Image (cartoon, rainbow, N blue to C red; front, side, top):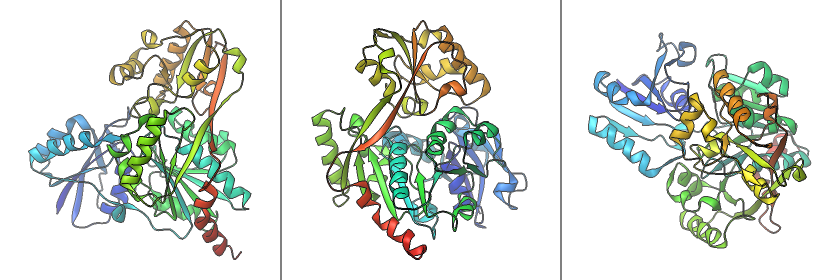
Length: 444
């Protein structure tokens, strides 16, 4: 019996267990470790999800305890199962494990992608914050124009009760309120729901598939971070970011995504430097010589741009893009500069508690990441907004943060919308195989 530890971040790790180890009589998963996301360690993967071979469930430890687990649990293999980390980072973890004796493993698509009968369009990326969700929304719009019914399946973010979150279905804002989802979850679900596309997410992606097949026409897998698809895609689209040119060849598993892609969409061409665009295209061609390249811009939408002019502004940006995504700004900073803000006020002196720890851990610059993984962290976010001496708050998360956090200051919302650059190939031509497959299934 091979004794296994899975290193994860409450997502890919559980999926790998479910599809590879849960029913494998030759393996025993003795522990998960947790990184990247706060408040998810010191839990148990419940027996109802783990199966009868695990009557006590599977404990989840902080990744900092890995050396202890390797020395005390007679471990044979460690599986690395989280994303958006550099190749160098992965090999440091490998060296740590190998020095203790066990094998170090990465599970590939053949072991972890679930086959489907419904056509699947997977939208993945080279890094967090490249523009997956904008692209997914655009493709959903294309499918609706074709008379098809898309459904979004989002990469997992099971930060609460794992058993209750085995399969989650969201079709309205009220559904999100009832589930009391975190700010990060709401950022990933709300904009799809607002455009009429239902969202499924959870812990068990085979069970999610059972809820979808035979009901909707096309499954849109909206990937998390730069992770690989959980389902075998009919069409695999990967979003690349010229503002981080070079990362497509140096981050895991983003490079794998580029190498596997049926098409690569280069986003943000409107704000990227020509040299970076040229370098990115050359790198993509070196990794994948046959994938068509689509070019797109992230069009800035501001509900009241005149309100920004001359103001001292606090910019609240999407959290994961700033943290493990490595960006120091997003749509909010772009809007502040474009529309004449007098000053971007630095919130770091006013952050406390776990929010202060985020600034200590990540070099995110003078903007406020919309962290909200717990009730207390949401309170910390509200206090930081209240305390920062700004005239105006620029909300640049994909949600209306005022639904979650009480903000007394005047606010302006900023969003990105994907705009394809005219020419071929287009997203419509790239997703045509999935459209044809859906029509065949519908007898059209």
